Length: 253
Ligand code: NAP
Image 1 (tube, protein in one colour):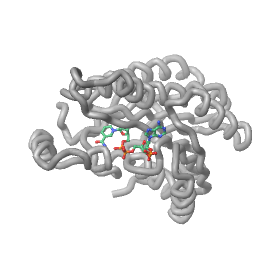
Image 2 (cartoon, helix red, strand yellow):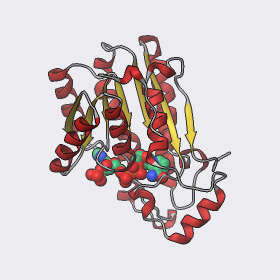
Image 3 (cartoon, helix red, strand yellow):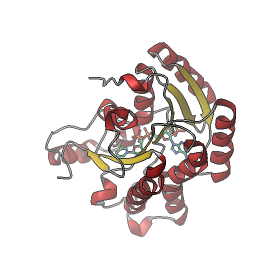
Image 4 (cartoon, helix red, strand yellow):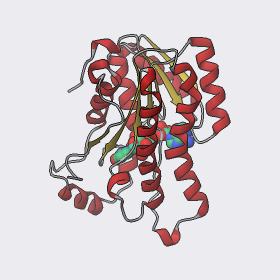
């Protein structure tokens, strides 16, 4: 069931990692609510154009592709500052771009540690920092950072990913404290196992094992996550900031 919030109509919201999975689900849900969606992507411009057209047919007030790799500070800064200069400030940010590499600690390579931290943690910080000055000029601003239950509970084979996702929680609370007085809210959400390419890689036995540990006995759908994101971006959550919200079917009760 798709959530609807009237105040999202015309709201200008950036979604990073928007071409696939949760990011795509969030972009589509925002479009169905009539938002102006800025679609962050790092490669395949033709796919980004196609998705923008799809978002407009879903009801987006506007859909604008914006290419940058979140792990590259200079690219983030140039793309976002350029966008704001031309189109004005955003009032919503969904830091979703991320990746996982399941590797036991003993086999984890230095390069993999850099990729996991640079993408999952530094990427979100780069985006918030690049936009912070312009967000001060906007109103009803809400930032949603996608962390993970793994950042709360840890997981064997996911040490660097967990470190990055846990870092997002401290970052989100700090942003909430620093910018709250300027009307900017910042929250983190922690999905459990959600059906996307990221979890497609799990072998059926592991998937079955995880499912048996989830009280609701299923993996989540992207719509489960996008409904929560819509609520946090909307003013329906106007007194919620610095919060960490799990959306995990109960796996980490
Ligand atoms: P996904 O299907 O693998 O999609 C990840 C998206 O992030 C893709 O669009 C990808 O772009 C983009 N991305 C990766 N690295 C990037 C970079 N350096 N710069 C810009 N974009 C980049 O993953 P997902 O399952 O939707 O996950 C989305 C977020 O939710 C991630 O932060 C993930 O950690 C978090 N999460 C997922 C789950 C889950 O079970 N699925 C659970 C908890 C948290 P390309 O298409 O170019 O690769």
